[in-house]
Image (cartoon, rainbow, N blue to C red; front, side, top):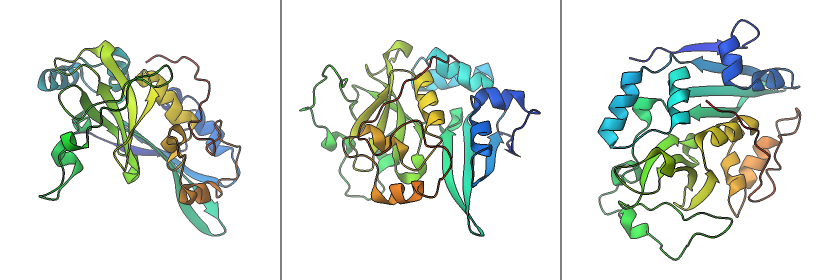
Length: 248
């Protein structure tokens, strides 16, 4: 059973959490209007948990993902803004624990008896190009695991591109939107984690990596955040930012 403890305001007494969050808590806590910066502490995963996951799924976990879980078995950090006398939850950054790093299947996507299968949604017209790798497949050609449910706005996934048995070097991170279209995010988990932190967990930030950008509703929520501007222009479809190397 996983033990969790909520830690509002990291300060200097939690150096391991400061390292985990890459110092973003100090930026948030010093931003006007931001309040209730909270991280849920999770104990490190044990090595046998990783081995069991690999054996169960017939997949080799990438080294940076392993190192992340050996530091913390999942991640969840939230923050809010104060508007007049109201506290409004705004930012949420999350990575599933190993027990919730589950394979995306038909049952995890639909609950209706006559719903189409994921294979029915396959579209092979999209080929890999110079700026966009070949998209994941819902059939046996790819193995897909959910890293984050994005509060219902989509799914960030760890994708093995070559099916089972799956090798660590064949992984990429993709975003699956609510219409079940795929959008490439990063080549590695480390690069994705930095994206997650630098975007501050703002609502629907993953849609900045799509052709249509974030929704008007999400933009309205962003208007509540009057601290320092996010390091990426979320109004720019397929926005990108420089990612400094940080290995787990």
